[in-house]
Length: 432
Image 1 (cartoon, rainbow, N blue to C red):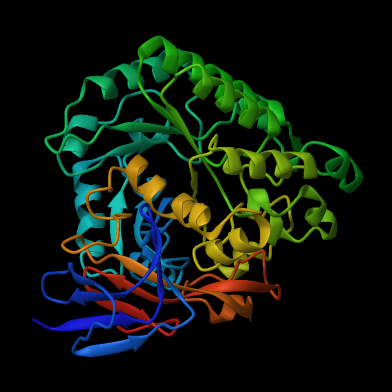
Image 2: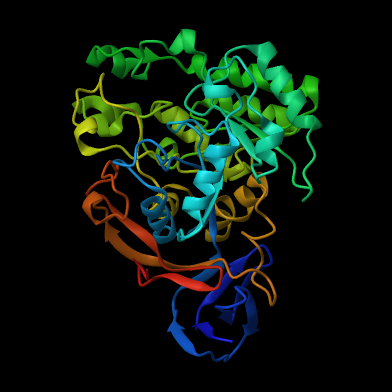
């Protein structure tokens, strides 16, 4: 047995906060001891830091297969590990789409040597075209637990009803329920829009996407969840109206969950004033009141998880004019720090939003987001909550550089990450 001890830190997990050393075994990949004054073959001093369950990202674009110039599974997992993530759910809008066993198997094979667990999602419809159901049962047999046409909302209500009913009829041997995740956007309303429709789009002369394009689909799918009894997960909520509807649905006992991105609780449409495509994202950055509503939703439990919607793009594509550049931002390496800077929440609550709560939604709770106890999987991160650092796209592990926080000074950073008992990030740098 070869062990590493994380020594001298505080532990924060679902059980609360306490002092203690944590010993992990490299071979078995589990925590073998937690307590005071422990030893191991390798000692990592984490005085002043916090040991937490590893983070889980419900919404990551790894671009492989099809757009490896922007990102690969390897580089994306490196960025994830540096951000404290021990598992990420890869979105299916790749080329080819993740709508077949062959593509899912390719992603799983590429992820076998990654620095975190790569959990592929499957598309709801073949080709994400919204006409024919993907072979969900076949994909589920390979371990897929989340289905989404992310990047395109499912436009046809009857088709979405069929998809929910079919997903609700599936049974997983591991007992983990399936979840349909929805990119909420009524295409007929958002067509031609490249930013939020409002004061700033009018000033800049850019086509806008109204809040109602998101909210009408949230409303519809809450109704469909009520009709079918099947859970719906709402991706990257961005408007006050959406948050209010999810809050009311939960109060009514409906099985709905939701996520929000760091950029949607930290940036507004005013950042687009300089026509810089780095701030073009989908759904678009909204108003200050929307940002406040998303923060409130995270604080009161309406929104269950922070998900990055990490969307890398090549530098040349992001240098196109605003209306021509692709939407999307990097998020994996800045998620924790932006949350610490922007959310008026205890550290334990922020860790929960990044760790055990998304792990439950993703069907990964058996391996990730577990309490830090003897015998549990050693998927952990070590947080320095007080260190300050300046964001630089060129210093990131991603192949892309499109961070909206370039040059910003943030507080708090992941120092070490342990995945399967292996220290994959030490002092902020990947170890392999």
